[in-house]
Length: 297
Image (cartoon, rainbow, N blue to C red):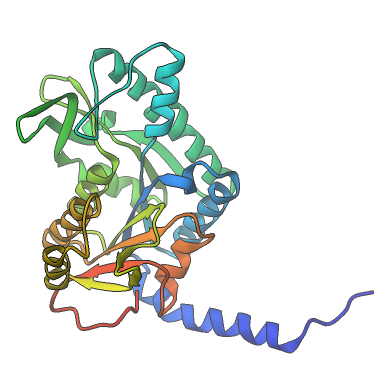
């Protein structure tokens, strides 16, 4: 026997759909670049949720570009192969042996797992790395004179290639392996690669899925942050440590033409949708100083 569900549940669902409609209309045809990493990439339930979420976003007319990490997997495979994992000032050093592992893990194992998961959930994902059609051109990166080996900084993105894929309704999933002028292969930080891709595409949004709630100031989540506010918080010491370069990078991306940058907790199911399609959101959005909107995604 079928029973009738309480009317309040239907009303709640209707309210959610109605509230989401303006955002769907606003973002149809726009481009979102999503940096995929952290727990959302390792927890089986969260992986399924992510695949469904990005498929839904694509189906309602939003162009989705995914740039993924895979540091944990690189370390695990390197250890299994007896290749030393070395870090310099907290950043991975990549030598000739390590770059083979990076290419194998990022462009192979991790990339194809993500593509397969999205396609299994009804998406049309295409797996790429920066070597494909010279998608990501890079030069050797030096950090304040520190040599990180075969680590690169992106100098150009093959935008016509990405546009071609997006115009045909497909979803690029990019492993942050890049190529130099002489054909040398470089490992690139996934956060920086996502920023470079978003900048090149003049994306509407750059979303970082991470293992933090967002930006916390005095243990409270900041829902919307301008550059002027961020500078004040850094001077006060309210924003500190590893969050400083992440925030600085976000505002560099905004100045380069991206409309908004979001840091979203990937450990929360459907956090991507909640941040984009609700007034309150669930993470931190970073906006231009002249953006007078409240947290309306």
